[in-house]
Length: 144
Image (cartoon, rainbow, N blue to C red):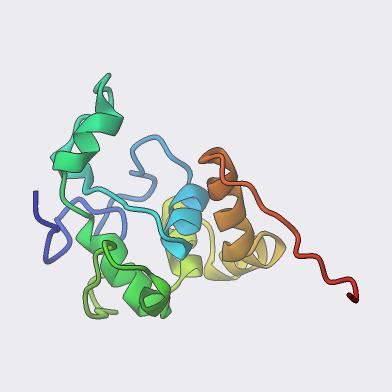
């Protein structure tokens, strides 16, 4: 299936989305995955309870809302080929992780910024990569 060109009406990244409607995942998961090179499928193109979900994700389209959100945050340029890229649209889609978190957790923007200062997007990405069993190796910086 082809990646979608614009966010659907129920997209979690849309400013018009229902607060907390995140399909069972926490807002932090969305931020961590958007910050990194995760393929994010459109939630309207698959069944969450599908026993063969991993195999069937190959048949789903990429989430347009996540692509626009990445562009709004300036993260789109760091994404590899194969990750959906779309132009920024600050009117339709959240412009920052703090806006997304504030909306979905129903807290103030300042509270969301404080949460993200304690656990920034890079840390949320590390958590998501850890779940995907990606291992981090510290570089050897000792003099040779």
